[in-house]
Length: 444
Image (tube, rainbow, N blue to C red; front, side, top):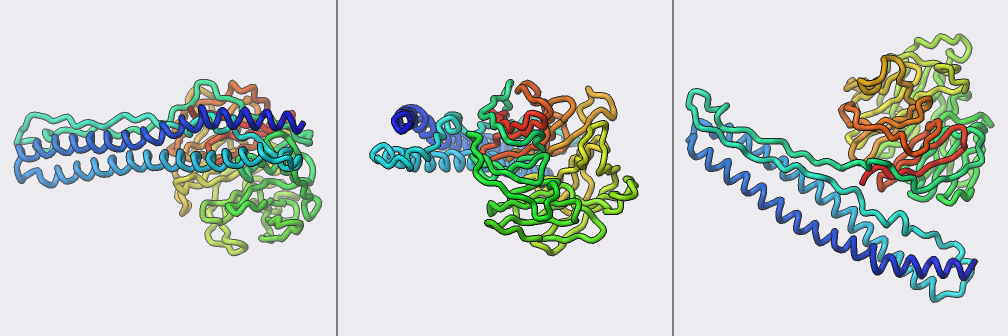
């Protein structure tokens, strides 16, 4: 095993130094070229616009200024996208530099334990971060007509920055867990995942399927949802005793104790708050499922904002799926929208950070009304929203405004449920009946 690990390390070192690292260096160099070309292009746009403005004299100065502002905004947006890409590439270069140093040090050691603990990241690093495609805006001038000055100035085509999706998503890892039914997953890092399923134990796995840690719920009840905070701590909701709990080391601390409400889905936000969906606890006895459901934002255990949702909630039995759980999950998008999947109402609801309704997604136009049953939900760095459709064995990808983009349905997925995204926009999906977590790459 020691010798095989050494051979793997030697192979990884050679590929990183000879192939992958130079590819990232070339990409970093190209970023500078792109930045120069972008500046030249937008300067040309400004020059053309100025020439047209001079011809129309002072009566159209206001309109010209507005269009210049539009150019500046697109310029800034374009450069921001390039800066983001540069940061991602430089971050990975720094990581690879450290990996190469570590590999060289490990190849010189005879410490079996250190060598045995080595885990290759070459497969993960082989692909560059998501590359965007750009449709550059252009200025189209018109012949001057003093009677219709505003219309005769011309128009500016829009800046379009697109991150192309893979025609066929790739499965990067296939992780078998110990659950007979696996419900949810939350990323601790790109290589470690918290999971929960059909018992009262939450388990931490690595990408090799090795069990790293197990935590039993404080009440011995099955958890309803789990999340990992930005500080790497596990939180879980317990519907049956009305609590939200934080796992800290070997201790479990009750963060939130609800009276008259039962917590369902939860997520950790970008600023460290918690979003918790909850429903009236009386439903457990009366089965009156037409009560309002609410989303509450907490800072620690302090309630900051309450958002009421009007939809049907069924905690006991949903759409013929014989699991005594509620399919209501929540996540925060990068634009701070709050996205909720509600299987019982057949919809995905999105509201702004202050609770204003934005849109309701009930599936693409091609599917019949009422047949869409969303379960898990997550968002990626491009503000796209992903939700799993358990009974149809597929995942919907929609943009931040609710427009359907595509399905992920050709990755041998069976009964997909829980979803989460890592820092490189890789998707982790739980398969309920197989007990597997699949890591999927869907961006080019």
